[in-house]
Amino acid sequence: MESQLVPEEQQTAGNGNCNKSKGGGDSVDRHCATCAILIPSDRVKKCGKCGRRAYCSRECQAIDWKTKKDEGKAHRSQGHSRWCGLSYGEEDLDWVVREKFDPSSGASLGLGVFAKRFFPSTTRIMVDTYHGHNFALSGDIIKDTFAIMEAVGPSKHLAHNCNSNASQILLKDLNDVMVIYSKRDILPDEEITINFLTYGDLLQSIVDPDTMYGPFLYSGCLETFADCRRILESRFNIICPSDCFCRDDEMDKLINASRKAMAALREKEDSLERNPRRLVVNIMMEDLQNLLKSMDKIGVSGMRKAIYLGLAWRLCVQQRKTLERSRQFVKEAYDIYLAILHPKSSDVKAAEMFLKYPEGYDRYLWFDR
Ligand SMILES: [Zn+2]
Ligand SMILES: [Zn+2]
Ligand SMILES: [Zn+2]
Image 1 (cartoon, helix red, strand yellow):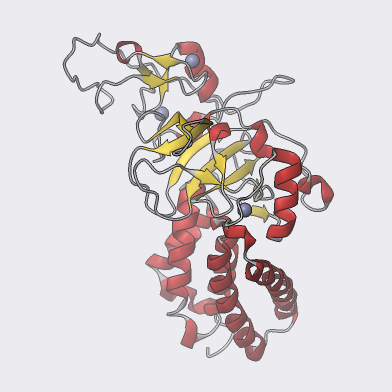
Image 2 (image 1 turned 135 degrees about the vertical axis):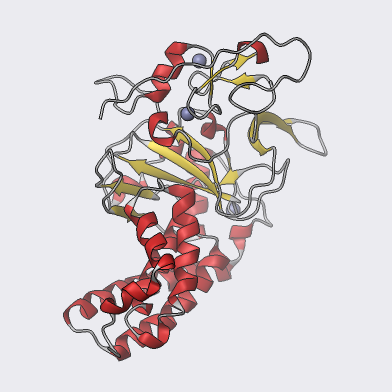
């Protein structure tokens, strides 16, 4: 489908009163979603379709709207045509990039991104562009790739925190889009932070570009915090304070145990494909419950958790006695999918379908038919 430009909204010059614009919202200064230039309130042009995303010019709107990369050109577009009308934060309305200062010395600590409103847990905060790399889905190449440093827009001002309140995920093949979403509740004026070292969080989509149907392949690394600190220091010149979240040795034990548990679960899942056994399912369910608890303590990204919530869901629907329990897993995964993925994506649709018609899953029961 050919993407088309929607007309810019005609704005009337501000006269000092708090005019409502046609697109909704008060008349305020904004930053261009493409070139980040400050636009005075009377010069703001907004996407005519959703009335939320702001531009300095028609050229910038055209760049932001398109979904195809220019050959050989570094692109700046996140393909707004795909995200238009979906809910997520907008610069200068929901969050702001500003300088921060050390409370004791008053020294500048550089720029940061701050929430202007309350973001409940698993809310999409920002959709941004990054310059793509040739990712390898495993091995050293991905470990050596810090896509966050290649962010094009405001997400490049997000600071690192080992116990971050938000996560980033790269959507590869979807115009190299980076989605920032809250991992827990974020209060107004709180700095929005991400963990730079969840760099492996990548969704490779094999989707129909128009309908968004198709599977998403997830990859990610779960490094120990000791490894993370080494990389943080050598790559970003960040040295964690002595009381940092990551300096608890129990955390690394938990991470190592989680990595083993994840590998074991994958192995058992493969064996189930060949030979469905109720005993194996029951053991996996117990291991999964423990793994999900550990993940909360470690503070893993939402998408990693969603992968294992999805596995718990698949296992629960195989026995009548656990069918009801699957609702809790689906609900939790659904919230995460909604924050990250397009509402038309197959994962979101599947979760919605289950929550609406759980009885339809009877045919998937392996046991107790
Ligand atoms: Zn612009
Ligand atoms: Zn729009
Ligand atoms: Zn740390």
